[in-house]
Length: 371
Ligand SMILES: Cc1cc2nc3c(=O)[nH]c(=O)nc-3n(C[C@H](O)[C@H](O)[C@H](O)COP(=O)(O)OP(=O)(O)OC[C@H]3O[C@@H](n4cnc5c(N)ncnc54)[C@H](O)[C@@H]3O)c2cc1C
Image (cartoon, rainbow, N blue to C red; front, side, top):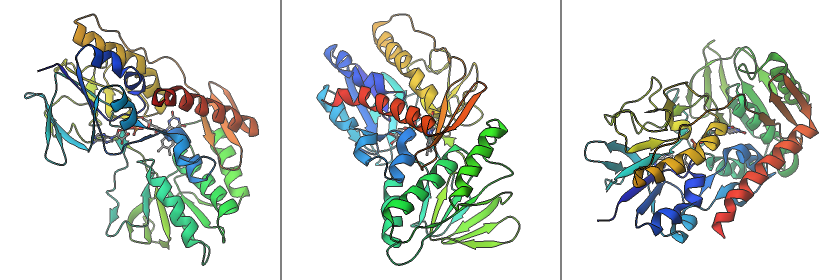
């Protein structure tokens, strides 16, 4: 049998590997890529898709197309666990796929512990593709009357989602939605205070109701139960309460970090099972825990590609250097953004223009492999 490489998830850290897949297949390595969707959606432009600045086609990569074009096999499915002793990944369908080397880029998810009952009107902000359904639902419900939209969480995605629901309502809904943001003591609490204040000012100016200090206890259908005892109603609820690494690894007998992510050393390789690699939100980087931001997944790209190739060639591996501070720009949905790196921070139109330029450039670079 030919050597088998399995890629679980075609996320942001597998972009370079996918673009260079033909170098594996030409060597006789059989590559299988497993992903629940035929497309991978770029999270940086997800809120912009919700607000209709971008179409779904503009923000997604055609994973199946690229894999098949380059001689690999695409499996539409979800990996639920792995058996590191037998070197098999287990799919939700019950199928098992053998690997000589495997690389995980399966991302993260929003825990739903506070949710019970029906979830038809509830949208966790991941997977990004669900924002497409949310936007159609908001437009359709707005035909009759203003939709009550609740956003739970006060981090970057909650801010971006609130701002972009506003844009959707302002431009595309018959009756603009009533947007309420339920959050903690401040917005964007991991950034300097000025960044949170800028975001709050922009949202409030547009009539978005920010309810500070309103932790949510549970959500049942259309009702939000606050820890204070108050109960709020909403037609659409976005959950942006923080993420956890993919739960593939928790019951798989493979070493994990304290957050349940796949433990990897500086070569993005599991220390106990050297044939297991990983990148992006689903890993725990042993040397230095990394923020769950796309920036790191993108930086890991070339190292994952080189190391997977080196593994099959018995060549030395390359270490991953996380690098210094990273740039974040938030899309506020009204054509403005907030730019933040080191001590530089500013809001307004230029910040959004820079973000839009960087995001479109990233998309164009990797969409080139689809042609
Ligand atoms: C709304 C929003 C906006 C964001 N904006 C930014 C930003 O502007 N800048 C920034 O740096 N970060 C941003 N982030 C954070 C960023 O999304 C993550 O850090 C980034 O997506 C991590 O990339 P990833 O490839 O590891 O995971 P993902 O992007 O989640 O990709 C994982 C891939 O694996 C697939 N997959 C998932 N589970 C399985 C499974 N069990 N089996 C097989 N395949 C699977 C998925 O379908 C997906 O294609 C944002 C997050 C959100 C929610």
